[in-house]
Every structure is written in C-alpha cells, then in structure tokens.
Image (tube, rainbow, N blue to C red; front, side, top):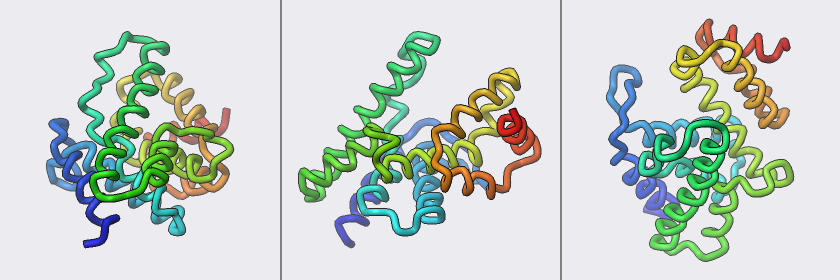
Length: 193
C-alpha cells in the first residue's frame, strides 16, 4: 500500500468512529466517513488533475468533526464563526498528526494544513477548489435535509452566499448537479435574485 493510500485509510478509519450516522442507499454510515468519500468523489469528478495535497485535504476536511460540536459554542453568527475557525485548526492538527505518522514531510503537512484552514481562499487555486468541492457536497448531499429546518428565504440567502464562495468552474459544476426538485427550486430562486 502506498503512503497516500495508507493515509486515506487512516483518515477513513478516524472518521469511521463518528457516532453520527446517516442513511445512504439503505445503508447506515458514519456521517464524516461518507462526507470524506463524497469530497473525494466530487474532487476527482470536477478537478481530476488535483494535487496530492488537495486530494488529502479533501478526504480529511471534516476529520473527527463530531469531537467539536456546534452546541459547544454560543448561538448566533459570532459563535458560528468561532466554531468554524476552531474547526479548521483542529482538522489541520489532526490531519497533520496522521500525515507525519505516515512519513510525509513538513512541507506536505503544512500545505494540507493551509488548505484545511482555507488560507488565501481567493488567491490560492487549490484552496478555491477545496471550497468548490465542499459547496458541491453541501448542495447535492445536505441541502435537502438542511432546508426544511429554516425559513425558505434564509435558505435562499445561504445558497447565495455559498454561490459567491465558488469559482466559475465550481458554479458550472453546481449547475450540472441533479438536485431533487425542492432543492433545485431553492437554488433557482437564489440565482434569480
């Protein structure tokens, strides 16, 4: 097994411990394990020339995320942003430990960390690609479960903000998604206004 494959397996093993489950095609799967696999799927479908660092970052973007639940932070935007910032650093640290244990050098550990922390989002093509992929996974896999919990105008606003985070290439990939009718209608409203 190559070092890359060993690290992907280690990321998956870490995420297989997720106590949060989701039903996918009749299977009960650990939520973050499935998320990592979907990130890889969309990355390779959208950016098949992705660098090794980007492939690694995509697979571990939410590594052990359940260990830092949103409920540990105050409600509202300030609490949400603090949670997201702390998560980025947590994911980079955990991924870095796994990468180091597998023998990756400090430069690769730092590069994967930069991607996970979303440093220089609009200036670094790989950071932008990672953001694009996260947005695609959200739109295809999570919008349907997310939308009913909120007022439709709030969801439309969130989709608009998601759209603005994406590159033109990511937006084109999003337009090609086969979304359920309710999700497609919300995306259509977001893009129309």
